[in-house]
Image 1 (cartoon, rainbow, N blue to C red):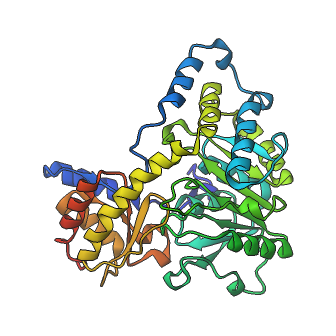
Image 2: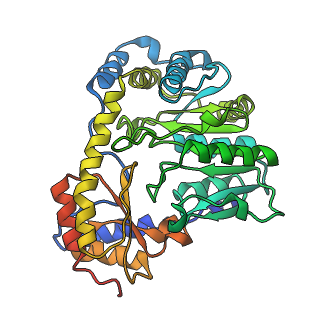
Length: 384
């Protein structure tokens, strides 16, 4: 009775099925190895927690934070973007703190689109993208991410009659772990500018890169018509703190600030201080966390290859995206695997139609646990 059309349009979550499957496995006495959720298990940098701890004893942090109070975080974000990507932004007009990038995206779509506008959305993609589009009342045109294209969208294949208001990208990618080059972003930004389309880039895995690879920023293609969302959840293991920032086109950032001003204040000032400190840490701080995920990748992939599963070696992110031979119902498989072995993975179908036949592993357990999880999964048939 009280559900609005917007709320009713938000897709249900496959992950509720996984929670139920994990509960049934626990009831059977199985130990749960949860590789289904991409929440970092690593410890935040100690100096970041020290900064937050000190702030909690400062009465000046207890009040509502106004926009002017966010300048230290905005300035730290601007300095980080210059140091890391070589881009220069105006901290007063092109940067805005967020209560996490997921919140930022939902409010950004409300700020820059009108109901009935078209959003170009990758398939597969992070499931909350669909929910944010539904709340904004948008039409969604999907862009297939195919293995033969390196899981990059083919913008030339967008139907001629489609006039998108926004294009949403995410590289390093969730769930596929694919990466994109600076040249790709230049081409995508040019394509968007020709059509009056806002390029939105969700960039939470910017520092979770392996070997010599370093992820570029969409802002390297210029800030006009481009907004990038950053998060400290993955790079600094601050997921529960809910803090990030939006950067880019001044008009879009201003619209986002107006919408956010109607529904929330900014993150707690102590969290802002901690985030500003984190952004100013030497690059080695984030690289240390990435090295842990890289070691876990190197432990899991040989075990999956031994099963005959098709999985490319990720250059970044905290996931492995594996095609399972013969798999036609990834949801049923993931539920069955959790119930029978206690190993929980994300079914590819949860990320979109193009995810069917795949499962996603979150690299949130030590190497020996990942290897044992792969061994257990090898005992689960792909057919029910």
